[in-house]
View (tube, rainbow, N blue to C red):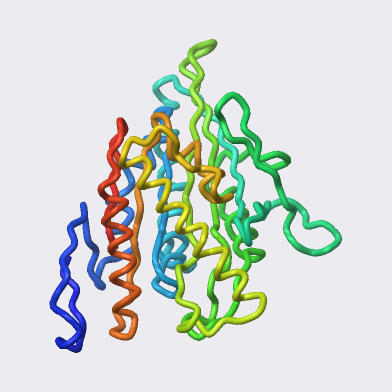
Length: 307
């Protein structure tokens, strides 16, 4: 992938290499085809995480959720999982599925599916480490059996997710949104039971405060967003270097995602960039982050394409 400033006086082209790059003409189906096999790995007992990263307004929510008539990765992944589970059930496997939707807003973990308390905001949750596994205390999990049962849960979560209008995006996501599906698979009657989790994460957009024009409460939100994204970069760097200590606890986002970023997990990241010349510097910054993520090597294979 090559990117160059409109004004040649500001420098020459910069080149980046990723597993895949999607052009402006790529459809939602084209994007999902690239990740469909990874999502199905969750049925085989692997924890799987797919992130969408990029500056605010670059299309992350469109990629992950999509509009009603043109669904993104999350609804397509759910539909594909149930279809594949039906095929495996015909061969003797049985499955149980539970869905949760959360957001990390200003370093608070919120349940987007639980009835809100009297204050009107989503319920706030605490993270707890139990035998090396991060659990979310009090998180509402809904048992589902079909993709049709998941659709209204996704819609309900999106209605209460924290958003605000900025100069860069009239509906800017002010939180990291996490869709989690817990899967239990059993082979035959009384057979082995395997548990795994699929995380589909629409990260809040990185932003330069000067360009987004935020102040007051939105300034606090922007700082929390940028801090947590920086913490995600630190975790990636620690994993890439094989460090003995990985700073998962430096932010609620990375602590929440610890299960999906360690062990036998499989992780993929989309990086969305804006085609506008005025966003060149932010696009280069996003691509540099993506390149660092793409170099993350561990005992697990991680595919990390740029978009």
